[in-house]
Structure formats: structure tokens, C-alpha cells
Image (cartoon, rainbow, N blue to C red; front, side, top):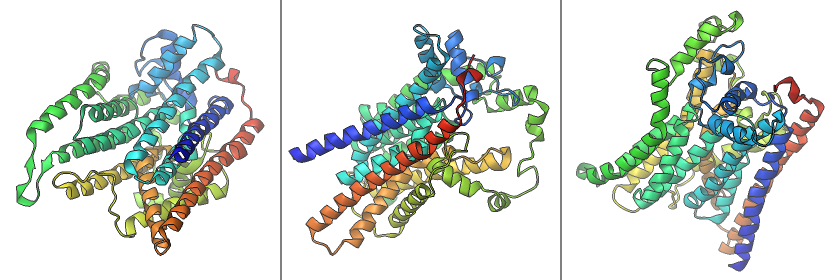
Length: 469
């Protein structure tokens, strides 16, 4: 036991140490404006830092040059955190570089919080300690995933919100939605609602699974526990509304009822965009009369989405080794295929206590699949009708469920292959393979960052003064 505890402490230190070492390296090394759209996103926290106020989406100071719209129409909680952190840092320095690093550091901290929640979640989703670590390493150290936490964006907060929602939901299904689990899930919902529309499928899933949990019995004897549903539902709803209502009320007031800000953003683009960037003149696949299938067949949507989900840094220009892509493609394919086609195991992350839990278990997995498919559908819509470049970061909200099914499938496959081995041999083999997986995941990340990204940055330096006032 003492030996295990020492190893657990050692690997935990390695886990967080690796995150901080790679994250800080990327945060400092990346030239400003090199990560995707960072220059345009940085306009908002810089405005908040300079004025202390939240911007109206129409304000010229936050509008994207040429395109005419701004990201201030959409939820900006991460930019608020970055802006006020920059405002505080401004009490001690007026260095533009320090301001940029402060904004990026907020996302690094959000990513660190996500890494911690992922570790907690792994303890609920997997009984085997080795599987927990493989899941945690896979979910935290995917190159594209850690890249998100090192520059100015809202995606980092979104990923933390997903981890919190899934952890709170898992605790809730286990405890009957205690105050603690409800508070954690509500916090995740608030962060998600105020950061990134692409992940709203998780909010819907939380609502559906919370409702399904209060269905008891089976067949014609299904009953709905109205009392607990209302009691706990009102508690969760009040917390969420207290956290998010102000933003959507503000948007409805500022933008004539458009509480999501999407239509107003399009109107702003039509008003202020340069002629060559007019959204009405953009020749999307849809406007050219092509079908969605034509786009998939004739463009690089599928390949580029997969590769950039695994890891393409910079403005979609810094690729890594082909072996990194092959490793992750193989790992995800083997894991998910094994999870889908190999025999069902008795162990499950969904609590089995109470009545009608088999139905809840099935519904739980339906929701997880939905949460994986929804970002893909939205990415397809963006590329087909709006001409957005396909990017893996649009698909990253699917990461945690994907890693869950991958590791669960690898567990099944390993036990099938070693089913005739003695128990001790099986346990030793599982330990060795789990350690190998963690080492390979670590190696792929280090190769991507220090073997490909850093040499690119060193060979293509950009002076901050060229971008920052």
C-alpha cells in the first residue's frame, strides 16, 4: 500500500509538472497573433483592461478589421477574466508583453483546473487505477488539447466547463444529485453558457439525464418523482440563472431582443465589413450549389479536421510528425471499435443502484454519443454554409467522452487477448501496457512541442511590437 501511495504521488507530480512545463513553454514561445485568430480575440480583454467596462459588440475598438464584426456579441466570460487580470497586472507594469502573457496565463490556469477535474473524473469513470491514469493522460495531453490552454480564446474555459459538467453529473447520478454534485454541475453549466455555444449539447444532456434520473420503475409502472425533481431542479436552476441571466438580459437589451447575439453579429458584419469580406458575397459550398456530400468528397474537410483535432499548431500551419498522427488514429480507432464490438463488461461508470438503472445507463451513453456528434455537425455546418476553415478545435468538446470510450475499449481488448493468462500475469501485463501508453502519450506531446513547434517559432520570430500598442 505504501509503495502504491508513493507511486501515486510521483505520477501525480509528473502529471501536473508535465502540464505546467509544456504549457508555460508554449505560452512564452508563441509569437502574438500566431495562434488561430488570437489577435482578433485579444481585442476584447485589452479593451476591458484599458476601460474597466464590457464592450458593446458594435464598438470599433473590438471589431475585427476587414470582417466588420466582433467576438463581443457572444459570451465573453473568459475574456472578462483575462481583461481584469490584465488590469490588475497593469498596476505593476505597462509592458505589452506582460499584458499578453497575463491574458494567456488565465487560460493556462483554466487548463490546470481542467487537468485536476479530469483526474477526479477518472476516479469515478474507472475502477482500475491504471485505466484512470491512461484516461487522464490521454484527455489532458492530446497536443491540440493542451495547445488550447496557451493562447487567448474561449475554448479553454469551455473544456473546463465540460469536465465540471461530466464530473458533477456523474456524482449526481451516484448520490441522487446531492447539493455538492448539483453545485459542481451548475458551475460547469454556467462556465459553458458564458464561454462557447458549440458545447451547449452538454447542458442539454445534463437536463435530460437529471430528468431521466427521477423516473423510477419499469414497464407500465414507471413513475416520476415530482417532489425531488422540483426540489433539486429548482436549486440547480436558481444557481445557473444567477450565474448566466445577466449576460443574456444584457444582450437582449443591447441588441433589440437578440439575446444570443448571433443575428446582430451578422448584421454588424454586413454594416462594417470591407467589400472583399462581405459575408453576402462569400462563395460558400452551399451558395455554389454543392451538396454537403460534395464538400466532403471534394475538400480536405475530413482529413484536416482529424489532423488538427490531434495537433496542428499556429494558424493551422505547424504540423507534427506523421507518427504522432498515426499513433492517435490507431489508439482512438482500436479503443472505440473494441468498446463498440467486444462483449459488454459488468463494470460501468453509471450507478446501478435503484430501479430502472439499465434504462438510465443506455440513455446516459446515448447522451454521451450525442455530445460527441454535435460538435462535428456544427463544424460541418460552419464549413458548408459559412465557409469556416475546418479546425479540430471545433471538435474538441467531444474529447472527454471519446477518451472514455477509447480507454474502456482498450480495457476490453487487453482482457480478451490475455484472458487465458494467470491473474498475476494479467495484472502485470496491464500495468506495463498502461505505463507504456502514458509514456507514449507523453512522448508524442514532447515531440510535437519541442521537436516541431519550437523549431518553427525559432526560425520564424515575430516582434511583439508589430502587433501590440
